[in-house]
Picture 1 (tube, rainbow, N blue to C red):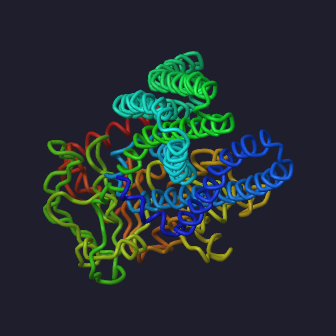
Picture 2 (cartoon, rainbow, N blue to C red):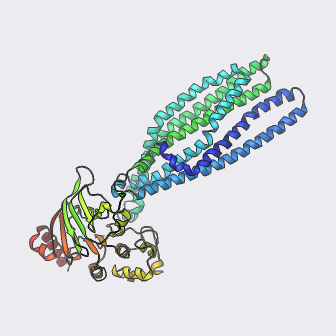
Picture 3 (cartoon, one colour):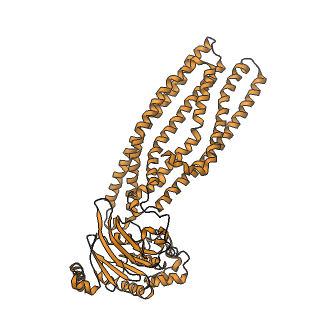
Length: 575
């Protein structure tokens, strides 16, 4: 998994070289400071050589300043490199998501993807940054300090060699048990984010049904589960740090005890003991650095496995190397098409359907009959698992995805608008759309009057998701956004359910008059929305029950007749 990160480091290779080089320079300076300090005591203070003390003191100050400078520069370089790497990784993940099909996205929850792009990448970024800062420094410091300590007194050096196995066991224990615990922790974090996201999106529903207490309880359960997982993951780290510090301080006490005896018998000088204690501190400090790196790597390994899942997910819909160019016309052909979301869960069965360019086709069926899935196969939002779909006489798989989807405009069941102005939302359909084009599209969608009555017209700012608009207004703007694209194929997936019947009739009339050259597919619950279509497709349990005009279906299709009669009774009783 770590190898997969290399492409996102290339832009910052300079920092991966310069940062460690500066850190090694800092370490070299720090290694010489205890030696100079010991010489000042042994050769200057005890000998009464004031000149030597002054010269060595100035040298120590100079070396310390060089070390400080190298440390500051190294920290800056490693920060820039780590933050840049995190940015590149996050960008790569987001770009990967843009190439996912609906089926790929269904493999992850929205909250989980948000957590992976933010929290998980931050963990990996911190581990990378710490690696640049400490990974070159700790081994160099450890080896150099051990060499210097051995040079001063080999017998006394055996003290910290006793401590190394203890520290090694602690690191191994943390690595074995830490990964699984942190992976569980991240899943619990996904759950908390999911609860918060769902609550914020559905806040109006929560308040309308007075379910604040229930939602608070649901959040508390998820939050407590996260806290418990966090405590379980942190227990190892909570135990490791005191044990490691106890080991380090025990080494220093042992060195002072045995070293003091050596000084007392004249086998060691006072300055040498001071230097030796400093090197022991550096050795133990290096081990602490390595333990911190190890802990961070354990944490980031769990995060990396989740990021790796996003980056390694293979989009099940991709462009072929040879594409047939833009969509030529709006003709559509389904040839023995079936689709299954998962093996054994087939939702479309043996669909055969021909639609001529310029036709208006209504699609009627009960909930779960496969209407939305059927039309989503046209722009390859899903891929048919059997048979083939043709657009403009060509298999949809022979088009470049951009060419195919530029020839198709969809208004989905969920009316999605983005933060920004009305004009910015409409220009999702056509980036360079003029005011006249926006007005024409809004007029056809029955949206022009309310847009012009907004405080700033087309420049009115919309809240996130169009929160300051009614459901019907959002639907009409989404239809206008699709119409402004002037597609070969227009798909309206139950897109007038939130508008009144009069506005629905106005939209259908505008489509017939101003957009008659495009193929229009209308999925609707109301038969009145499709009764004027060139033909109507009746679907039941993933199959086509019948195809015909309104009059033909009334005469022969039981399902259609039942739906029509039930809706007519509803209209009559309402009247």
